[in-house]
Image (cartoon, rainbow, N blue to C red; front, side, top):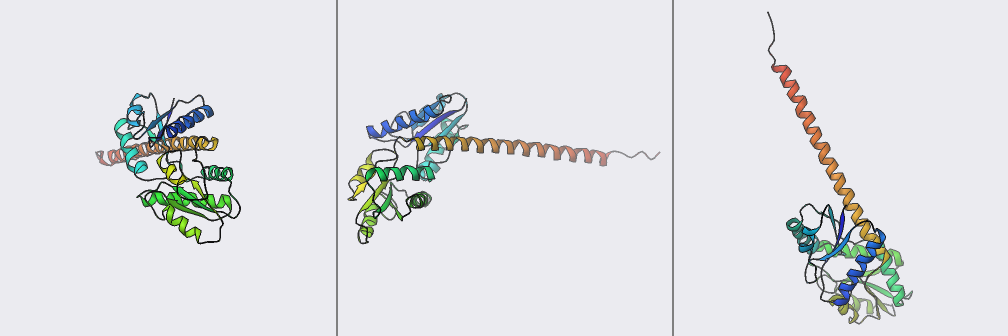
Length: 260
């Protein structure tokens, strides 16, 4: 049986760790016949490097990360290659319409009004591809809300949240709402709450749509791996057939001719 491992970044926030545990429990409830474990790349325990070697059978690792970047492209593959090279690594969670749906609900719960400006606030990254993922998520949310959404970043990336706030304050909107594009409470969400926006949503947190998205990433990764394996088998069989045909032809051509 295949085991699903939820791979989080890690946090020093107790509430952040509780959120990951709650999400794991919700993911388990959706498919009780499949083993689901949680692990972290750093800071929190258990570490992914320690968990992977202990698991029997096939393993699919779903990164609890909302965009690409160093952890998705370098850190996570490195840990898997060393600790469990046969494991399948799924795509990160975002961008995805299900995340936009959660963000829209969080904004509504926080009191979003029709005339408010909206910022999608992420931690940020030095990787341009990761920033592009966040901007794609902002476009999905803009479609969902039927209004513009500005992507901004708490750490690396441009514009910063402060820059986005200044820009929008000079516009006609009476208030600015920040949608927290973070999975759980912690350092970066604390920074969002103190940014000076008129309202800041809760993180994505433990949500049925998020659990469904985890399984969607799991299923897609398994299908891709199965398709790749089938392609390798077909390629191997084709190579053997061609080699056999060539050998037979060469054998016929090189056979001696009886002219007596």
